[in-house]
Image (cartoon, rainbow over all chains, first blue to last red; front, side):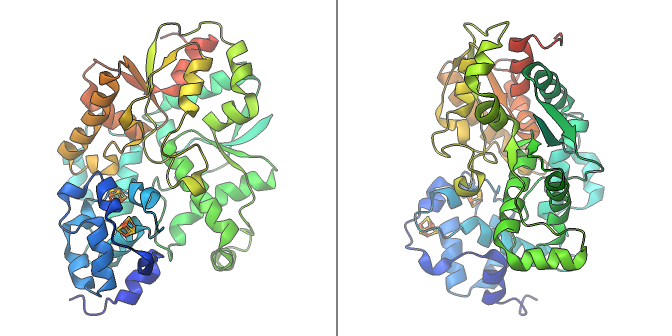
Length: 128
Length: 261
Ligand code: SF4
Ligand code: SF4
């Protein structure tokens, strides 16, 4: 299903410079979501380097990354792991029928305090 | 001084206080926020993909409009600020993006030169915390206030240029200027769970809970934020013990800007 997705596409969308990674693991150590991820930020970089893009497009980490940018801030080599995760997420949701949120789900998720910002953010992250 | 002002979607709805208090305080401090005409929602998250263009257009239109008026552009919501600051940086650096945008709409001939300022930066860099302090009518004496920075104002530090991303002090200096006692705590720049709280409320709740616990452990009895989503995530956990509200509320209180609570 994902045979048309290439490592080059992932890298181009991400703008991440994975060759600079020295596998120190600081990105994952900084990541507030690492426990919920099946492929953690430093592993994500290694998977990309190895061309294991199919696994990245199917992993749970795509929906666990918060875009908090702690990994980008703290990476000593300026690799930008979160941008790699975003690129993989975009490659998924840009495909027809692969959105991660459906508008019909929204009423069940709402309460009186939900700020518009939350709905807009979720739609931007989960849907094309 | 007159600034272009972008309130954003949430400040017109759930976060009206953030907007009203900022305008009332600006009037006392002697600057004007001139709302951008016919603005659209900025999208609330910065489009990280290098090939994203359409999702940046609402921000580009606003930045261009402010630029044509020769005004700096002021934001209040942390998410809006993040989007504008980064899209502006893209437009300054990326010739291809500029050309693509111009090809789409030749009116949008914009090169990223508008200055983007968060309201807090206006207070610090233009008004000055010394002047602010001199205008305080009701000092917040004895109040132990924790600043919750979250992610969006600070990171990535190079582009955001807000404060030291790992050891920020601007909100604490603001609290001090108003006569309060700032309470720094370790989780003040950790994530509250962000947009994940829509589909994974429990996980976001745990993260917001850690922020609260960290603040309470250091002795904070109230928290301030600039972000409606942080406020939502943290206040769902707060249960009245450590209330969280917008930083502009402290301003109207201290300046006696004519709003009763
Ligand atoms: S912090 Fe940077 S250099 Fe270290 S493992 Fe992560 S991506 Fe690689
Ligand atoms: S941006 Fe995503 S991957 Fe990076 S530290 Fe935050 S949650 Fe983890």
